[in-house]
Image (cartoon, rainbow, N blue to C red):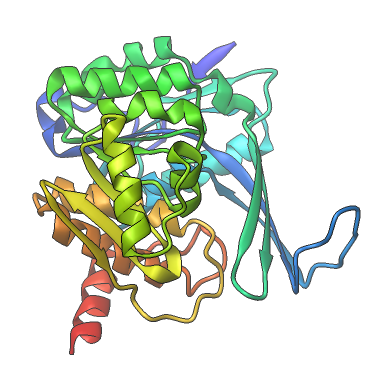
Length: 326
Protein backbone atom coordinates (compact mmCIF):
# COMPACT_ATOMS: atom_id res chain seq x y z
CA UNK A 1 0.00 0.00 0.00
CA UNK A 2 1.21 3.50 -0.83
CA UNK A 3 0.03 6.67 0.84
CA UNK A 4 1.25 10.22 1.28
CA UNK A 5 1.95 11.77 4.65
CA UNK A 6 0.44 15.19 5.31
CA UNK A 7 2.04 17.17 8.12
CA UNK A 8 -0.52 18.56 10.55
CA UNK A 9 0.44 22.17 9.96
CA UNK A 10 1.36 21.73 6.30
CA UNK A 11 -1.51 19.63 4.93
CA UNK A 12 -3.29 22.35 3.01
CA UNK A 13 -2.55 22.32 -0.72
CA UNK A 14 -0.66 25.37 -1.93
CA UNK A 15 -1.95 27.19 -4.99
CA UNK A 16 0.37 26.77 -7.96
CA UNK A 17 0.60 30.50 -8.49
CA UNK A 18 2.42 30.74 -5.15
CA UNK A 19 5.04 28.16 -6.18
CA UNK A 20 7.37 30.41 -8.17
CA UNK A 21 9.54 31.04 -5.10
CA UNK A 22 9.78 27.37 -4.15
CA UNK A 23 12.72 24.98 -4.22
CA UNK A 24 11.68 21.44 -5.11
CA UNK A 25 14.01 18.84 -3.63
CA UNK A 26 13.71 15.32 -5.00
CA UNK A 27 15.80 12.74 -3.23
CA UNK A 28 16.54 10.28 -0.49
CA UNK A 29 15.63 9.91 3.15
CA UNK A 30 17.81 7.67 5.32
CA UNK A 31 18.31 6.80 8.93
CA UNK A 32 21.92 7.77 9.73
CA UNK A 33 23.69 5.39 12.11
CA UNK A 34 26.96 7.17 12.90
CA UNK A 35 29.90 5.82 14.89
CA UNK A 36 32.93 7.88 15.89
CA UNK A 37 36.28 6.07 15.95
CA UNK A 38 39.93 6.98 16.39
CA UNK A 39 40.95 5.36 13.07
CA UNK A 40 39.03 3.47 10.42
CA UNK A 41 39.12 -0.31 10.96
CA UNK A 42 41.30 -2.46 8.71
CA UNK A 43 39.87 -5.35 6.76
CA UNK A 44 38.26 -7.94 9.10
CA UNK A 45 39.13 -5.79 12.13
CA UNK A 46 36.70 -4.87 14.93
CA UNK A 47 37.24 -1.56 16.72
CA UNK A 48 35.40 0.12 19.56
CA UNK A 49 33.68 3.41 18.80
CA UNK A 50 34.12 6.42 21.04
CA UNK A 51 30.48 7.40 20.53
CA UNK A 52 27.47 6.66 18.33
CA UNK A 53 24.25 8.36 17.25
CA UNK A 54 21.03 7.64 15.38
CA UNK A 55 19.60 10.51 13.35
CA UNK A 56 17.67 11.05 10.14
CA UNK A 57 19.48 12.02 6.97
CA UNK A 58 19.85 11.11 3.32
CA UNK A 59 21.07 13.53 0.71
CA UNK A 60 17.56 14.62 -0.23
CA UNK A 61 16.45 15.29 3.34
CA UNK A 62 19.73 16.96 4.29
CA UNK A 63 19.59 19.30 1.30
CA UNK A 64 15.93 20.11 1.87
CA UNK A 65 16.59 20.98 5.52
CA UNK A 66 19.71 23.01 4.70
CA UNK A 67 17.80 25.02 2.08
CA UNK A 68 14.90 25.58 4.48
CA UNK A 69 17.07 26.70 7.40
CA UNK A 70 18.83 29.09 5.02
CA UNK A 71 15.46 30.70 4.27
CA UNK A 72 14.15 28.72 1.30
CA UNK A 73 10.59 27.52 0.79
CA UNK A 74 10.68 23.80 0.12
CA UNK A 75 8.60 21.10 -1.53
CA UNK A 76 10.14 17.69 -0.89
CA UNK A 77 9.46 14.60 -3.01
CA UNK A 78 10.78 11.38 -1.47
CA UNK A 79 9.89 7.87 -0.27
CA UNK A 80 10.10 6.15 3.12
CA UNK A 81 9.09 2.81 4.61
CA UNK A 82 6.20 2.38 7.03
CA UNK A 83 8.59 1.91 9.97
CA UNK A 84 10.18 3.65 12.94
CA UNK A 85 12.86 5.32 10.79
CA UNK A 86 10.16 6.68 8.48
CA UNK A 87 8.28 8.05 11.48
CA UNK A 88 11.47 9.77 12.66
CA UNK A 89 11.88 11.41 9.27
CA UNK A 90 8.27 12.59 9.16
CA UNK A 91 8.56 14.19 12.59
CA UNK A 92 11.88 15.83 11.79
CA UNK A 93 10.66 17.31 8.51
CA UNK A 94 7.49 18.63 10.14
CA UNK A 95 9.53 20.18 12.97
CA UNK A 96 11.55 22.00 10.32
CA UNK A 97 8.35 23.18 8.58
CA UNK A 98 9.09 21.38 5.33
CA UNK A 99 6.12 20.43 3.18
CA UNK A 100 5.93 16.62 3.32
CA UNK A 101 2.68 15.95 1.48
CA UNK A 102 4.70 14.56 -1.45
CA UNK A 103 6.61 12.02 0.67
CA UNK A 104 5.49 8.51 -0.33
CA UNK A 105 5.09 5.92 2.44
CA UNK A 106 5.42 2.27 1.38
CA UNK A 107 4.30 -0.73 3.41
CA UNK A 108 6.58 -3.76 3.42
CA UNK A 109 9.71 -1.83 2.46
CA UNK A 110 12.31 -0.55 4.92
CA UNK A 111 13.35 3.07 4.94
CA UNK A 112 16.86 3.78 3.67
CA UNK A 113 19.74 3.35 6.08
CA UNK A 114 23.21 4.95 5.98
CA UNK A 115 26.02 3.50 8.09
CA UNK A 116 28.57 6.26 8.73
CA UNK A 117 32.00 5.96 10.34
CA UNK A 118 33.83 9.17 11.31
CA UNK A 119 37.52 9.22 12.29
CA UNK A 120 39.29 11.58 14.67
CA UNK A 121 40.92 13.22 11.64
CA UNK A 122 37.50 14.36 10.46
CA UNK A 123 37.26 11.92 7.55
CA UNK A 124 34.25 9.68 6.98
CA UNK A 125 33.16 6.47 5.25
CA UNK A 126 29.51 5.89 4.33
CA UNK A 127 27.60 2.80 3.20
CA UNK A 128 23.98 3.27 2.10
CA UNK A 129 21.16 0.70 1.87
CA UNK A 130 18.67 2.49 -0.39
CA UNK A 131 15.50 0.79 0.85
CA UNK A 132 12.37 2.80 0.07
CA UNK A 133 14.43 5.36 -1.86
CA UNK A 134 14.73 2.81 -4.65
CA UNK A 135 10.94 2.82 -4.96
CA UNK A 136 10.65 6.51 -5.86
CA UNK A 137 9.86 6.03 -9.55
CA UNK A 138 9.24 8.20 -12.63
CA UNK A 139 5.46 7.81 -12.22
CA UNK A 140 5.75 9.48 -8.80
CA UNK A 141 7.59 12.36 -10.43
CA UNK A 142 5.02 12.72 -13.20
CA UNK A 143 2.31 12.81 -10.55
CA UNK A 144 3.98 15.93 -9.18
CA UNK A 145 4.84 17.49 -12.54
CA UNK A 146 2.93 20.71 -11.82
CA UNK A 147 4.81 21.26 -8.55
CA UNK A 148 8.20 20.70 -10.16
CA UNK A 149 7.49 22.89 -13.18
CA UNK A 150 5.98 25.77 -11.22
CA UNK A 151 8.90 26.16 -8.80
CA UNK A 152 12.04 28.26 -9.13
CA UNK A 153 14.75 25.68 -8.43
CA UNK A 154 14.86 21.88 -8.61
CA UNK A 155 17.61 19.91 -6.91
CA UNK A 156 18.15 16.17 -7.24
CA UNK A 157 20.84 13.61 -6.28
CA UNK A 158 21.75 10.01 -7.15
CA UNK A 159 20.45 8.06 -4.13
CA UNK A 160 17.23 7.43 -6.06
CA UNK A 161 16.80 5.50 -9.36
CA UNK A 162 18.54 6.86 -12.45
CA UNK A 163 15.34 7.08 -14.49
CA UNK A 164 13.68 9.04 -11.70
CA UNK A 165 16.52 11.56 -11.72
CA UNK A 166 16.28 11.80 -15.50
CA UNK A 167 12.55 12.47 -15.32
CA UNK A 168 13.05 15.26 -12.79
CA UNK A 169 15.68 16.97 -14.94
CA UNK A 170 13.65 16.63 -18.14
CA UNK A 171 10.57 18.16 -16.52
CA UNK A 172 12.62 21.05 -15.15
CA UNK A 173 14.27 21.64 -18.54
CA UNK A 174 10.91 21.53 -20.31
CA UNK A 175 9.56 24.30 -18.08
CA UNK A 176 12.74 26.40 -17.90
CA UNK A 177 13.14 25.73 -14.17
CA UNK A 178 16.75 25.98 -12.95
CA UNK A 179 18.03 22.51 -12.03
CA UNK A 180 20.90 21.39 -9.82
CA UNK A 181 22.23 17.85 -10.17
CA UNK A 182 24.34 16.72 -7.24
CA UNK A 183 25.78 13.52 -8.81
CA UNK A 184 26.30 11.77 -5.51
CA UNK A 185 27.09 8.97 -5.13
CA UNK A 186 29.24 9.33 -8.23
CA UNK A 187 29.12 6.79 -11.03
CA UNK A 188 29.65 6.47 -14.76
CA UNK A 189 25.87 6.36 -15.11
CA UNK A 190 25.75 10.02 -14.10
CA UNK A 191 27.49 11.01 -17.34
CA UNK A 192 24.32 10.75 -19.40
CA UNK A 193 22.49 13.12 -17.03
CA UNK A 194 25.06 15.93 -17.01
CA UNK A 195 23.73 17.61 -20.15
CA UNK A 196 20.22 17.79 -18.66
CA UNK A 197 21.16 19.89 -15.61
CA UNK A 198 21.80 23.63 -15.40
CA UNK A 199 24.30 23.16 -12.54
CA UNK A 200 26.29 20.11 -11.46
CA UNK A 201 27.97 19.93 -8.06
CA UNK A 202 30.21 16.86 -7.66
CA UNK A 203 32.90 16.56 -5.03
CA UNK A 204 36.43 15.32 -5.79
CA UNK A 205 35.62 11.60 -5.53
CA UNK A 206 32.45 11.91 -7.58
CA UNK A 207 34.31 13.87 -10.24
CA UNK A 208 36.93 11.13 -10.41
CA UNK A 209 34.27 8.45 -10.72
CA UNK A 210 32.50 10.32 -13.53
CA UNK A 211 35.45 11.48 -15.67
CA UNK A 212 38.54 9.74 -14.23
CA UNK A 213 40.26 12.87 -12.92
CA UNK A 214 40.65 13.56 -9.20
CA UNK A 215 40.68 17.36 -8.73
CA UNK A 216 43.18 18.32 -6.06
CA UNK A 217 44.33 21.72 -7.31
CA UNK A 218 43.39 24.33 -9.89
CA UNK A 219 45.10 22.53 -12.77
CA UNK A 220 43.49 19.14 -12.19
CA UNK A 221 40.12 20.76 -11.50
CA UNK A 222 40.35 22.67 -14.79
CA UNK A 223 41.06 19.43 -16.65
CA UNK A 224 38.15 17.74 -14.90
CA UNK A 225 35.85 20.58 -15.95
CA UNK A 226 36.96 20.17 -19.56
CA UNK A 227 36.02 16.49 -19.38
CA UNK A 228 32.69 17.29 -17.74
CA UNK A 229 31.89 19.81 -20.46
CA UNK A 230 32.65 17.15 -23.08
CA UNK A 231 29.77 15.20 -21.56
CA UNK A 232 27.45 18.20 -21.79
CA UNK A 233 27.90 19.90 -18.41
CA UNK A 234 27.05 23.60 -18.39
CA UNK A 235 27.72 25.26 -15.03
CA UNK A 236 30.12 23.31 -12.82
CA UNK A 237 30.98 23.65 -9.14
CA UNK A 238 33.38 21.01 -7.78
CA UNK A 239 33.56 20.93 -3.99
CA UNK A 240 37.06 19.99 -2.86
CA UNK A 241 36.94 19.93 0.94
CA UNK A 242 40.04 21.46 2.47
CA UNK A 243 41.10 22.78 -0.95
CA UNK A 244 37.96 24.91 -1.33
CA UNK A 245 35.86 24.65 -4.47
CA UNK A 246 36.37 25.10 -8.19
CA UNK A 247 33.71 27.02 -10.08
CA UNK A 248 33.37 27.15 -13.86
CA UNK A 249 30.43 29.22 -15.11
CA UNK A 250 29.88 31.26 -18.28
CA UNK A 251 33.53 31.01 -19.31
CA UNK A 252 34.83 32.16 -15.91
CA UNK A 253 36.77 29.64 -13.82
CA UNK A 254 38.57 29.86 -10.51
CA UNK A 255 39.67 27.83 -7.50
CA UNK A 256 38.14 29.49 -4.46
CA UNK A 257 40.00 29.18 -1.17
CA UNK A 258 38.34 27.33 1.71
CA UNK A 259 37.13 29.02 4.87
CA UNK A 260 39.64 28.09 7.61
CA UNK A 261 37.81 26.08 10.27
CA UNK A 262 38.59 23.14 12.53
CA UNK A 263 36.54 20.26 11.15
CA UNK A 264 34.86 17.92 13.63
CA UNK A 265 32.62 15.97 11.27
CA UNK A 266 32.35 16.48 7.48
CA UNK A 267 29.19 14.36 7.21
CA UNK A 268 26.57 16.26 5.27
CA UNK A 269 28.81 19.21 4.38
CA UNK A 270 28.20 18.65 0.68
CA UNK A 271 24.47 18.51 1.32
CA UNK A 272 24.60 21.81 3.19
CA UNK A 273 26.54 23.30 0.27
CA UNK A 274 23.90 22.18 -2.21
CA UNK A 275 20.94 23.20 -0.10
CA UNK A 276 22.29 26.68 0.54
CA UNK A 277 23.34 27.03 -3.10
CA UNK A 278 19.72 26.37 -4.09
CA UNK A 279 18.44 28.78 -1.45
CA UNK A 280 20.79 31.54 -2.61
CA UNK A 281 19.89 31.04 -6.27
CA UNK A 282 16.20 31.11 -5.36
CA UNK A 283 16.80 34.50 -3.73
CA UNK A 284 18.03 35.78 -7.08
CA UNK A 285 21.74 35.83 -6.24
CA UNK A 286 24.23 35.17 -9.01
CA UNK A 287 26.06 31.87 -9.29
CA UNK A 288 29.40 33.09 -7.90
CA UNK A 289 28.02 34.75 -4.74
CA UNK A 290 25.62 31.83 -4.28
CA UNK A 291 28.55 29.40 -4.30
CA UNK A 292 30.42 31.63 -1.84
CA UNK A 293 27.50 31.54 0.60
CA UNK A 294 27.16 27.79 0.09
CA UNK A 295 30.85 27.27 0.88
CA UNK A 296 30.55 29.37 4.04
CA UNK A 297 27.56 27.30 5.14
CA UNK A 298 29.45 24.06 4.50
CA UNK A 299 32.40 25.35 6.55
CA UNK A 300 30.08 26.16 9.44
CA UNK A 301 28.51 22.71 9.22
CA UNK A 302 31.74 20.73 9.66
CA UNK A 303 32.29 22.32 13.06
CA UNK A 304 29.30 20.37 14.42
CA UNK A 305 28.91 16.59 14.77
CA UNK A 306 26.49 14.79 12.45
CA UNK A 307 24.47 16.11 9.53
CA UNK A 308 21.10 16.63 11.20
CA UNK A 309 21.80 19.76 13.23
CA UNK A 310 24.75 21.09 11.26
CA UNK A 311 23.01 23.36 8.75
CA UNK A 312 23.31 27.11 9.56
CA UNK A 313 20.71 29.84 9.15
CA UNK A 314 21.08 32.62 6.60
CA UNK A 315 21.90 35.05 9.41
CA UNK A 316 24.66 32.75 10.69
CA UNK A 317 26.09 32.44 7.19
CA UNK A 318 26.13 36.20 6.65
CA UNK A 319 27.78 36.81 10.02
CA UNK A 320 30.41 34.15 9.32
CA UNK A 321 31.26 35.73 5.96
CA UNK A 322 31.36 39.20 7.52
CA UNK A 323 33.68 38.05 10.31
CA UNK A 324 35.91 36.25 7.82
CA UNK A 325 36.32 39.30 5.59
CA UNK A 326 37.16 41.71 8.40
